Length: 255
Image (cartoon, rainbow, N blue to C red):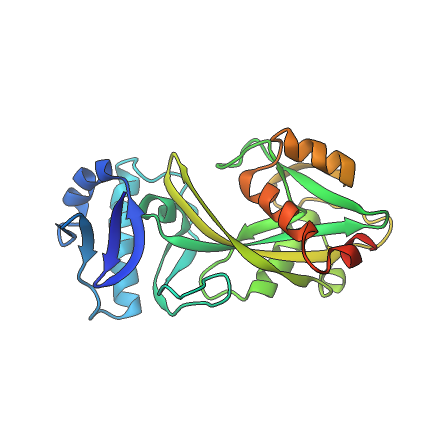
């Protein structure tokens, strides 16, 4: 993988085979000593966003970047622990381009608990660009540029599971973890912010954005079997296991 830097700041990693197409659409990007360097440290955040946005649109038009959403994520200045600290925004870019450039993004995932130590999990619609048909947490979604984490969690809960704002007000942070792997689109590098929500007895989730095909209510044994069987998406599996190992997990299970 070729490191990508903004000036001297490391921001991403790309497959070497992508260097050829980048030469055509990003001529100011330089390769030196195995490092791709974008000399844009003197530009403002908006100027950087505009320029790399132009590059991404050119790649989209060539069919290199797919699944365009017209939603932007924030590329942050690296910190010593991105799970604990947010870095300054370096630029904002269409979310579909993040994997191509190997940029780190952020997402929220909510484990939803019903009385009786049961978790509510959604099945991703077959129309989803990533992991169609696989199981997910109660709600999950990417963190848009300049969006608050809790606000994002509550928005996803409303859109994906029909959770009223009066209920989602009780959502609790359960820490974060980093997910890193290769995908066909490029490097997936994302900090997963984990939340927990105790749902009232009798709550029935209803999807409102078409991204969930059905909901399942799983006891711990059923959850373990489906996790072992690989039915969950990579990130949802990690979040489910992570949430159940949290210091407050027993309290969550006593919903």
